[in-house]
Length: 426
Ligand code: PSV
Ligand code: MN
Ligand code: MN
Image (cartoon, rainbow, N blue to C red; front, side, top):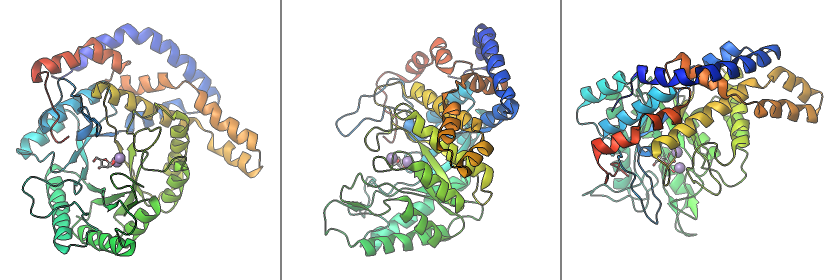
């Protein structure tokens, strides 16, 4: 199924008068306050977030998985789903693949399909946390950190294959997330595990094309519960430095211990020019992979404030690779992703409203109250008409969830794909 622009236009027509009134009111206010609304809307329109191929079906937990009907069963269908998100939101212009779950059979066909839907291929993700059927060597005791050289070699080779697949698709980056770690004290020699990992990452890095980036993701625990080899941003940063200029740290919002100040991590990494990738989600307890902005929207805004500051003041840091890394157990995955995209844009728009000059003056004057006022005034602004404007300008829907339901997208997917579907690779 495909959504065409006329369908969206006709749905927008019914909402246009209300939108225009809301937008005019807000734009007047913001312009009077010294904001450049036109440029904010343009920035929102240019902010594209990759959708991971694994988020298009129901994820499930270790206790069970309740399949969502009409899920995509192959790579082409996953691309179709991202195309639907892009048509409605104009914010999801990329897809991120996980290998071996998403190995294309017909490269030209896959590339053509993505291009026809306005999508590019974002970071490629390798998988050394599962054994594939018939594998000669097992990742049971780790991959790049393994004490077994044959296992390490196999994991390196897998990453090189992922790069090769990505090259054929036009991707420009590889994300490495390792499940490696230990469950019990004494199980690992921490130093050896880290050295092995560093050595293997350097070997993978050596195979990276010149115009590619390597993203090294960290995570404090899970699936291992005593230690994780790349447990935090410091370890990732150190490994990225050991690899070279094209290697960066990747921050996943769910990969921190409770109460970690993520905005400060973001600031430090951007100052050092080493923040490369970003995974959005939200959490209450751990790596919950919930809808972005559903639990801690103010924290998300503060993180965006640090990101916007970095994007404006740190030319040493490259453009970031943005991705949603969430999982859906209860909601329709596509509706959940639309909500996440909206929350990301909302936090970004609010951060763009922060008067950085005044904030700096207040900081210098030690006017703590004013610092807070400046942040919270921006946070409390209802910026949704700006998001709507950015979408309308690009042919997207004023109300993407409303349009999705109005067009009976899920019903049509179920008709085409069936009820008992399981998204491949999950
Ligand atoms: C691990 O929790 C993670 O967030 C990494 O980004 C993986 O690539 C992704 O999940 C899917 O396996
Ligand atoms: Mn992630
Ligand atoms: Mn995760």
